[in-house]
Image (tube, helix red, strand yellow):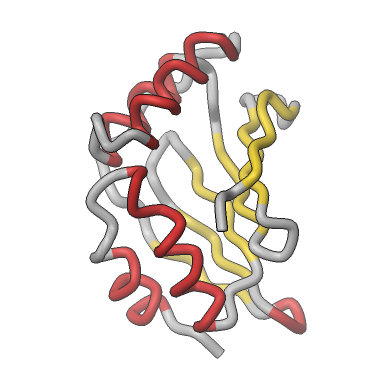
Length: 129
């Protein structure tokens, strides 16, 4: 089973959204099946086989997530981030401004789904191989 320390080691190589596909490959090797990132404080819940899960504590001061999602603006910020134009904390702030409360990376399906505060799906994207 994987540990938070192993995940942090893999994550330390990520400098921008452009590094995300390699990070996913590292998580696959560790046995991570997916994870949920919570925008308001940055904590992440990782899960694997047989209901195994570990939680990484908060990463930053609390961010207010807007109650109404702005999908179009979020997509603009997401494209910028994936192009390497913003760092992780900037992206989280942009997500919160656009009403994104969390995202789920499903490594089996190779998707990333973004949700609002009510748990509604706002955007589903395919993770590049």
